[in-house]
Image (cartoon, rainbow, N blue to C red; front, side):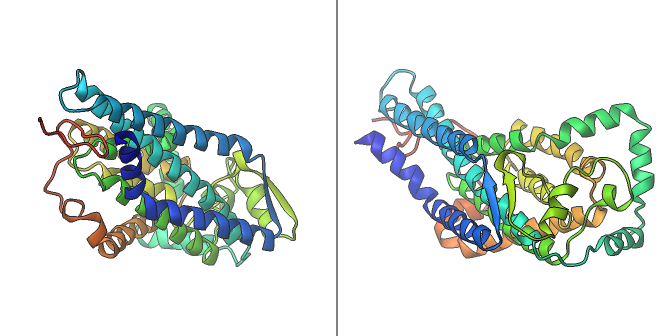
Length: 331
């Protein structure tokens, strides 16, 4: 059946990512047992992910049934199909990031010495004074307001970028975005376990370090229990927030107005990481480095699977969309 073909096509494009994500979930669950960490209240998160996946499958089915050659309003059904692909991709990414969040807690169990003095000194070597920057921002209410709003757009941007990449003619740009996001997160977690830090706010004795209770608890003895809906961002170096900001810009390149909007938003969000997120400048630089290396690695490793259009940037993400499993040719 055509509807089944469309769904199968979308799942085929994401099959290796889905397999990797499920494997990561299983490995993280086993490691959590070994580390005496229990994650509670997982049902709301699981329900939200399952709902997004079900909505995506429903939209794919509707799109394929209504996008036969010659059908009325065919273009709108093709658009719904792309939205379905975006919903499935977002559900897969949400599951992967949830597993990655637990992985960051597992890596923090290394309990190695904090490296804040090293990172603060590195900032000074490149001529950056965090205190002066924080004072500069605090003295400008409008800038403070913009930073506060932009910093917390990360979840919304994840869904937005899934949608923008799904609308591209390059059908596999979404897969590349997902792979880079999760591989970069795994790399970030491992590095943070080897070079842990509390961040600028806690190191300098300032308010706002809401992650400290969890971080300090992870350095103690178990068993430990954490609410899945209240896991904190405990990674300081490298900054995954910065890595995602750079990835959002990269993944939406050459997409017209949408790409420029994402660029503008992240040009505000990235500097907000320093004050709102309590990061050192080297954290941000480290995040850029991680995502840059990951993009190159993913493209090299998947050159044959992603296809020529995914490797080259010649095709812009413009034009009317095509639903999975459906060509845009007239009979």
